[in-house]
Image (cartoon, rainbow, N blue to C red):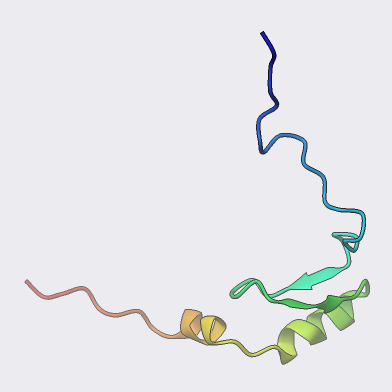
Length: 67
């Protein structure tokens, strides 16, 4: 009986992908903001990025319905 590997098992990123330590992503919309290794530049890239998902996360939530 031949065993097939699980589809999610041992998948490596392609060789043309940048190193994962240098990629800057938005935590709300998962948009690629750039590749930078210094902490101050990474913080600057995240601060300059404005997305609707990030603004909605800071808005107050709707109150629970009154019953």
